[in-house]
Amino acid sequence: MSWPTAEPFAEIGGLTWAGGETPSRALITDVNSLAMGAWDQFDLGRYRQTSLVAHTAPVADLEFSRGCRARCVYCTKGVFGDAWRAKAPERFVDEVEHARAAGFRAFNLVDDSFTTITSQAIATCEELIRRDVRMPWTLTNGIRVANVNEEFFRVARRAGCYLLAFGFESGSDEVLKRIKKGATVRQARRAVAWARKYGFTILGYFMVGLPGERRDTIRETAELAASLDLDFAKFSITMPLPGTPLYREWAPYIRDSNYDFSIHRPDNGLYEHPDFTWPELEASAREAYRTFYGRPSYVLRQLRRSAERGQLLREARYTLALGATGLMSAFARR
Image 1 (cartoon, one colour):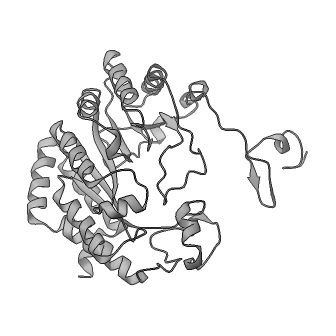
Image 2: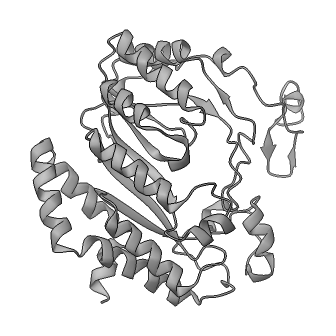
Image 3: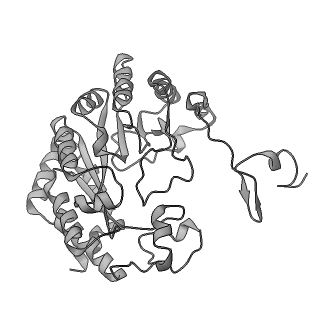
């Protein structure tokens, strides 16, 4: 039998290989029906490497939902689509307990859309509390500031979540509207205040060079990041990913239309920005890093907070790791 023309592979939807493919398969609508991880087939002792921000190991990556209802112009949803499908709180906590029984000691909830329905996210946290699961967990993919309330942060903290990230993207309401983020700077400030009130470690994601961006809006983004009470911030150069509205809008500016995702990286200037040169974008990202991390008040505050959390070495390591995305070069090229 030869691959891929022989049965049953040619009848399986959603497969792609060199020289051919099968039609897309229908989305799985009932995510509660998905099998749990066969972790008993693995020696978890061989997978001790964990995230820099994790407090213990090993860490399981768990999925609560698939799909995203948001319409952000820069985001690709080619894998899971627009339709948001979530697991029931009880089913998700079953999966957490399954991970714990397999030997995991923490988990990272890898969703971008956990808080799509805030009441459902709260119910999931309450189920973790009710079952007394007691596993520390994180939300590092970046939840939306428009889809949270104070009750969510209160209950999530009680349920064991200690670190979360927000996808702020921009400090300009004008740009946020242009990219169809569905959020405002005011909502960003409010969400961070709630997260800080309940003792979370907070990471913020920002972008420079978004559609409609100007030098003053990039400056607003850097200033917003510095004014928010964040523990860490990451600034990325906007990349027009294949399949996104932004990719279609900027098609005339893209040097290489190759759909190889490995080349779509912030360190690869594969397109001509309509309003900035590539060196200008890199300089803007470096300046944003300097604005955020170069404040003496930030350094002193983070040393104190990290020491209070008992995470001084780990969080210093995480900050240094940001050098791979531009932090170290920000200061080296000043």
